Image (cartoon, rainbow, N blue to C red; front, side, top):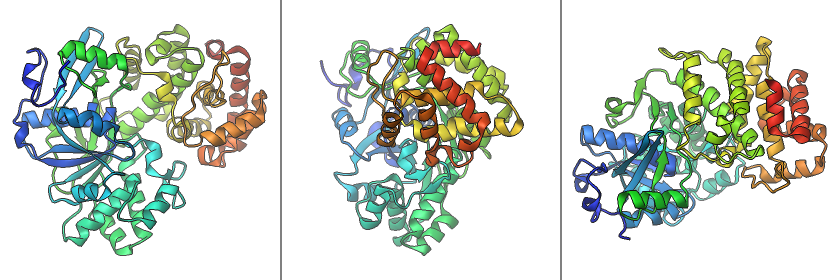
Length: 489
């Protein structure tokens, strides 16, 4: 079958939407670090919409920080790919044209830095996941001892971390007498713009106090809240897209119809007209970010661990199970009192909408995928909520079960005795502690709670937290995830 590309675009079926602007005239204005499925299903589609609304020099150059896979898939397609939105009523297809090129940082760090430092580049955006920021999630500060940070300090011309790349690009801009680009974080980090500003400033200060002061004074780091469920693309998805569009597409993106993007409207050198195509440009992102992080992401993680242990491959399967649907309702009852409602939002309605999104049978969002990197996610998604509930004297039974399910998951063996592929920056440490604890749930919970980078120094000494976690972990080990969740009612 013929490959999707600029040359074959005209052969698409008439019903399939494609770029409605002169793509040959499009110039890059955005460099995006970490051009994975989410960025291509969110930032790139919003930018596509903005280009169709009002054409401007806002093409995207993606950058892969580790592997060439994305470049190798998109290059033969001239950057084009299909976005397949899976609605319960049926699929919606669209070819996205806003991505112009993909660079691979390890293969050509100088080329990436030149593109970032170019006068054309006005925004550098990121989706590198929580672990890509080389920081301590408990404090939000840069880990100066992180291997990638140490490498970048010793090799400033060939950085490999996102923070190192940003600082190298900003250093070049300053040396050439130009202002900074806007740094736009699109990852699920609390106060992501503020945190990233601090990480970039801290890294810069390790080598150049003047650069750090310039970044602090002139840099723009808008906070954002992003939301769209974008599952990992499977071979079956690729085959389905090929059947629907009549062309081979090696890089399709699968997503739900829903999307949301709240952005603090603070930019150093302009931006696309995202506000005209559904993005919410606001003075304060925190209420939207906080709501999403606790209610969506916290529920997602809790459901992923419980659902995976119970044998559910996808979020739709797990949330469609009446036991886990009731668990989610109870979890949201514990979370909602800790969430200030953004203007115009009724949190109970938001929770009902989340459940409907989770239960969309057309979306195959794998529980295993969401379960990745739990050591980085728990502090933001669950532990902050738990601290507030404890301070207010509220119950945490459902929240504690989410934490216990993570503990049971990272033992590396499921309820059938099969191995779990635990993907986590602390995977080796988690395995060491789980192996040492053996089949003793109390020993396991005590050991894992001792990881200060995850639980801090307060929670391990708080019996109102440690007791229910240990009890739930014992029940998970003895009865399984479904029976344990059912017992909560």
